[in-house]
Image 1: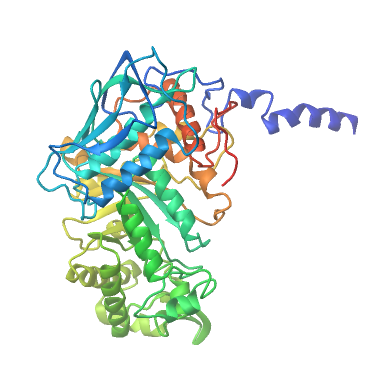
Image 2 (image 1 turned 45 degrees about the vertical axis):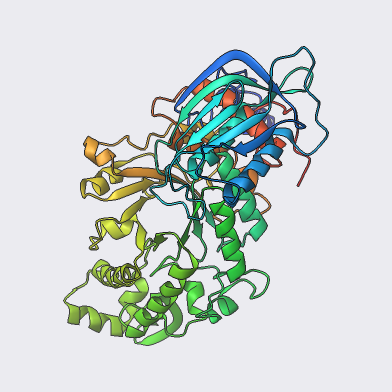
Length: 547
């Protein structure tokens, strides 16, 4: 017994990993950075801009005299609400709400204005961001004024975030900024984050909070996986029974029309697209509660078992329903694309149903139920195309040989760190986005952000033309074990690692520098009220004191 105890005592620190080997070794078997963060030559910029020239010249700023204004040459004026709203927001980020220290007499020169210059004739003040929106900008921090120049408002929003990250406090508590020139644009046009609001309902305020933090990290797509098997919280005006019977609760755990529009507008004002996903024919158990005859009756031998499977693909009523529902969806969500899912379809129920067996025989599908899935998906794609919407699909739809439109975007989620599927998709000529290595709901002890940071989306065998078809990637937060109690610390700053990989140049791979900058960026998020978890032992000048 004493021998057993002796081995248990020896083994316990190894398992806990707090004092011994785990201090040097992470879950993936790679050496982690285990030290206090140090100042980076790039300060706390995150994601790192394409080109930064930081100088020793220093300027000070006062909340009493500094203002963010439209440049005289700008095509956007005081009626551009999206910019005016951003000016107020970033002024508060820079100076806070409390009493600020004034500039020091005899100190560095004082900056009094940040002038925002939108250079294109159409600033897009009343538009929604799209896959082709121009997010480029130039930032000049010098006397007499800071100038932020961007072709469109979307670049101005990114530039305002960068300027706010350049501001720091000197030893007297005065706001200061170094003389700087930034030339910046995103590496990838699609930089997404998925939230799952079916497995656990997320209150609207938590979604808005996440959108705010996405903007701080220059994400530009909110992939709203709004419904799934567990619940249907989307309140449809056309089919109100879907949420009335399919939501966890018909009044408290639903998203009304006004709330959905609020999310869309909040996102728009931060340059973020809202991409809804209504996944079929699988993942639809909650749909069937409010729509009779939508799901396939399963059989046990010759008798119905009383259970149901995926959407019934052989009934005309199925496609009538889908046409009406997606007509509504296409009007509620203004984005040019809808995510149609198509993943993880279990054929067991279809195989058991005698009516489906007869349909398979009539269509000449034999025993290949992937052909039946393709039959359904093709009819759904035709419906969505008729509504003048593009679509994204999970990779299984491509893998099963469904006929797709040339502008289809294939979402790759299987394979972890292997990008072989990216080669297959792009070889077929389709645009692709990568999520396989970025499932942030999967957590490990230690700094797993490093694993996410090291991913290279173009690391697959393919031609240069193929690699041009990779339009970006997406971090996913599935909701089996995540609700609003742990959403934010599980997301941030881990999602920030994905954000830099998708924005910054391909050669930005210095893990030590990333650790230093991300530590400072994490503290900035904490100072802005974001409960972002720490990277390692450290402290923040302004700690998180609760919401």
